[in-house]
Image 1: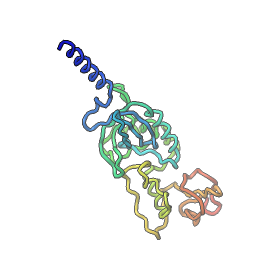
Image 2: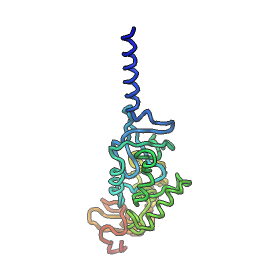
Image 3: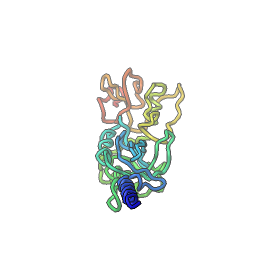
Image 4: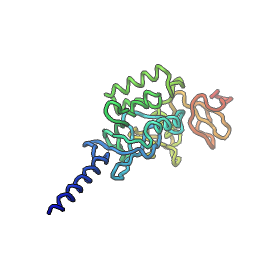
Length: 248
C-alpha cells in the first residue's frame, strides 16, 4: 500500500504541471486563447488554440484597407509584426455572416497587454468601424489622433474608406467572377455592399477613378471609358496617367 501512494502523488503532480503549462486553461467564458498562425490582411488573423482548433478572427471595431487599396499591403505587414507567432487572447464580441469570430485581440499579459485593434488605428493602418462599434470611443479617439498626425494612410490626404471602396468595386464590376472582395470571407466582415442591377451604371466614391491596366491611363467616373476598358481596376486619383479626354 505504501508504494501506491507515492505513485498517485507523482501522477497528480504531473497532471497539475501539464494543466499549468497549457495556456488554454486560462481561457475564460467568451474568450479564445492561442497562437497567431496566419494573417490574412490588415484586420483578419488565424489563431490556433492549445487544443489544435483553428479560429479565423476578424478584429472588432476596425476596418483596414483592402489588399488592392493603397496601404493594403502595409496594413497586413503591420498586423503581422504585432501578432504573428505570438500568444494572444481574444475577447469574443460576435460571429459574422461568414462564421468568423469577431473580437478584441490582446497580446501580452496584465497591464502590459497590447490591445491590437486600437494599435492598428493608432498607427494609421485602419479606420474606426463606427457602424459596428459606435460606442468604442477609444477607437474614435485613436483615429482622430492618427489623422491629426498624418500617420500611415492619413498621409495620403483623403483616403477612401474600405467600405466605400468595396461598394464601388462591386458596382463597377457587377457580374464579373471574383470581382468583389467582400464576397470572400478572407477579406472582410459584415458590411453589405449595395445592390446593383445588370443595367446600373457603375458608381464610385468621390476621388475614385478607373485605371486601364493595359495602357496605364486613369479615367474619372464621368469618363466614357470608366469601367469600359478590356483590362482595368479601380484606383486612386494619383495612379497612372490622366486621360487626355477627361483629365483623369
